[in-house]
Length: 128
Image 1 (cartoon, rainbow, N blue to C red):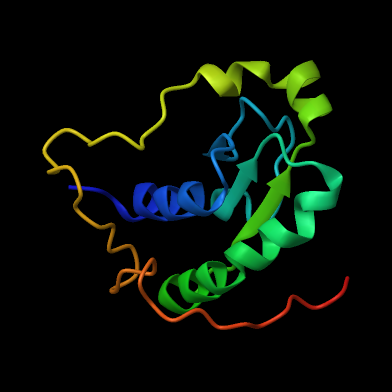
Image 2: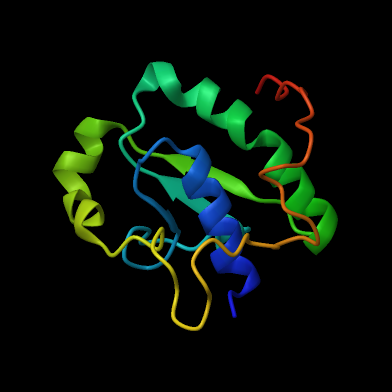
């Protein structure tokens, strides 16, 4: 069975256009910060692609917050930074393949409904 965090990561991965995606952990973040447990990193994101990626993930992050009560955070790394500091993430096993015990094609039900087919809300992120 897919756990909630794996299902969320899978949904983010599907919207990240083939970029490496992972939960923040001690391997990529030396310091601790509030919300670290619910922070996802996406690598190889050009500076000009950050807003578009954030918009793709906005409704998913809102749905996760409603379901879990915890806000999600996004950290992006440019291709240059990925090359310099995190090149190993490109060779990590990708969970796009079927997980053991889960039939291929089983939709992730991270938050009670399949967000891939849910209507998208076109809410723009607030400016920082």
